[in-house]
Length: 364
Image (cartoon, rainbow, N blue to C red):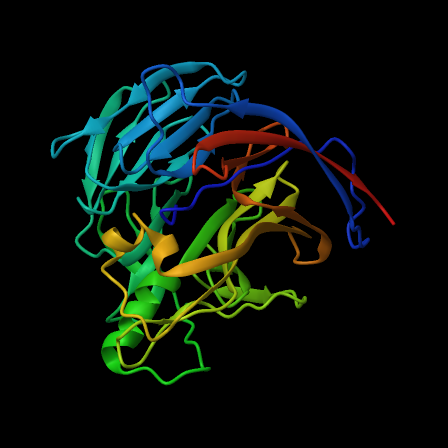
């Protein structure tokens, strides 16, 4: 789910004292959603929740949004495959505002499809300036759109658009280049499209935007006009090196791979950075097939040695509070109004479920 991607988590009821380092975190499974009858999860990619803690699940291969109640009961489908209004070809990102308006970013159509709180179609907004890679979207109270991805010509990863879709500005956030290997122009572009960009969230009260690069580990706090206030990161024993294309184009260099998947607020007080980690090995001399072939039979080309998720928790001022690791293919993507974390979890048979966790944190 990168064809792997999706994510989830939890419930915070214990007050955390700012600036106090906490390393004791306990996650308790609160809910598990399996495939409903007559529905097959085919390409789960993103999750969002509304003010009533209903769960919106984006399946980009089925070109559909599935709505579940807080208790995990299937409610309805939103949108459908197609070219017309309210239809999707490749939905990649979902966002809900304070009025429970639903925004679905479709990278194939280069537009956002907008639905009201009852899942009725409202309108589509087309963007003439659109990134490659894996774009994501958030929306501010004024209806402005912020889309992250790879803007190649501008060497930028975030752009702000008006509610009508016109470009307002590119934020001064350059693409992070990996310095460990020399790449020719073609391969450098391909690496950037896969790995540049990142995720965003708002603190509307303080009018701040938090941006987390996919790699290397770096979080920036900006104003909504793009002015950088400060940045921070965290050093640990993980190898933050991304997967990089081999320079002769015959294959890949393999090794531990980490990517920041999603940054989001927990109970509107704490910042969560969700990270996906994959340890694998393979033969860089083997010529790899196109991605759509590779994903159907990846075991033929490389061996996955281990996979796990990391959750880092900060204050909104960037002070580190706590971190936890969970083994397996699990992708944390958002939290709900009760502080529970939601994620996509994939078992050993590649069958996905949606999971929700409560969190208990104990100060040391």
